[in-house]
Image (cartoon, rainbow, N blue to C red):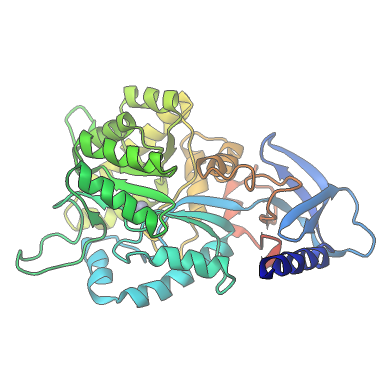
Length: 420
Ligand SMILES: [Zn+2]
């Protein structure tokens, strides 16, 4: 009875909200890469209603006639619970000196910033020691308690003993870790079950560490999991209809991950030619996160790890090879790995610099990203019946993709969060 009453109220609210119409100077059809001029988009509750070339009588028109409208942007690799970590010290202090409650407060601010930048959907790829706080931030956003993007979350992530910070403390000092430590396939499988039971949408694994450049230019690493462990994680996640994102920056981490059948490769500074072929064949997505590598390189080199400077060039080369081979590339930035005060849309010009056309870069953050999230029926294009997640920029993002750093209108689920 209560449920039915609620449904009736919802319908009434939706009907009441139908009067809003966006008048866009241009709408970018991300599928064709073409502009439609002078478009009126009716907002029907949380969804997109009719799209036409005039406003229905009596409609409340939001004037975006000097703007280009496009689908809400999607960042498929963020950390709202991390506030930048150029050096190991930056990271350690957040886990050692900030309470999880304080980190969650900062996380709500990061989520708000993401939405304000025009990212109406994020895949947040682990809490870095803040346990299940991402599930709570997502819940608070979905219940309208705080503003923020739609979220898919990975909770704690998985790595093996001895591979992930905090490291380097005296053995007798118990320190927190930025992941859930698992050893052995049964233990790993149990952790997957646990994380899913507490709200994980994705399972995140760290597949490699300790990077070094070989004389032949290949970026080598130490793989973390055994193949048996990695296969158990992927099998358990898939058995429960969840996907696996693998942090894999170099040779063995990427190879083991694609062989185990993960759903996305995160970072991929180096990907061997045969692994690029496997990614195309299996439909595994590549989330390159180009900007964060450049952001941390100098600081990490100063702290003694010069390899991060070399990795920038190797990364650009891997990106070019993967793009040319037709790997599905989804937009992801690792925001939180860099300061949330930096707009993650800084990634777009880098993708274009390394070989994508502007429309391909925009697709990576709309249609391609929506497919990675399994949400292509709901988001990713401006089409009648989809969720009304729409942003706007003043100008032509196909002429200058850097304009995506100037989103000045943000609508999510039919609600306006930012207006010029
Ligand atoms: Zn990350």
